[in-house]
Length: 196
Length: 327
Image (cartoon, rainbow over all chains, first blue to last red; front, side):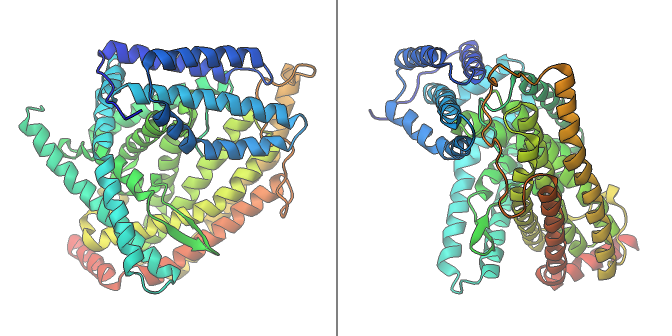
């Protein structure tokens, strides 16, 4: 299925979605070890929500694959204890359900709508604005960092660690200065659009 | 250090949520007071910078490499309240956009990475930099120790949260987290100092000490060593009671309150169980050893950074600026 833009929803709709996911995740997280019926029921509920929301299978599975490695590490450690298999299997089920629920929400709700939902939930305006700016400039600055890192690998002739470190530090500093300069321009633009 | 959903019990999760909300609310008020309005968008772009900086590798030693976590760096550059807001944005986006760290564990993750990490970093950096003389090399060297202390403090708190949830035994969680994050902390301290020095090279005004940090003075290397010993001793005093006193205390409280759940299966899994650190042995010894070795390494790195990495031109320029400021 190709990537589709999710439709927009009202702030209260987004807030309701956030609260629903929070409630679902809380119920999953408090499931006891080995309570397979409850996990199966929750999985069924998630599957129907997934179908109703018509979330992209591929996008959600990619998110799951990206989020799992760290959790799998913890689950492997759980194997080394009495009854480890049951414990690890429960943990795997719980974390998978929680990640899937969040991934469905992220796939079918625009980030700007999520922000409006947070505002409707009375999250302080300064924090919501900061979150919005973070998301807005995330791709830009990550792109800068990628270019800096590519420059480091292409121009670092010696493989001495100190050289790589200094170059990485210079790259990070450059990205920080870009972030500062960008913030100044954003502040000007915000004021031009009538802030305060 | 991102705790996923299902690893914190409801009591811990809710308590962390309340504490984190209070901390973030205080930080928002503080940021609005300390940052001029034209710098408020920096809260958002700096958070995007933290994401971006995590793409850059810093080789540490023996083939391992780490990346910047960022809490200490942002705390030094923007101040503690702003750093808490910035790290809050980072942690919330990691949860909502990338499913990194759980939604029910959001309070706990905010508490360790957004509230405690920047606060400890700044709390160690300001007095240490002042004690070392307040010059740029001193501030850069202090950043190594601050980054180390901040990472270790967040890791110890994270282990405490997992232990108080009954997910992992404290005697297993503390050494596991302390040993790993003593290493991560040295890398974080080094990366923080290097980026700070690189920022200073281009925009010395951004790294200039704030008015509250007092006037700069001389920074002899001997005083650095003496201060290092003092802080290392403080670390031992801090870590030792945590390592030796707490588990017994917690277990005693748990048994006397009837929490030990003799017959019932534990509601939450115990991922580490009876896990032991193979080389150092389990328990407090490993934690203390890790803390000490890490602190010693952090001070070695700090000394090296102060001597070698800070560009001489910048150091002299900042000394001249300081002289100009005093006259």
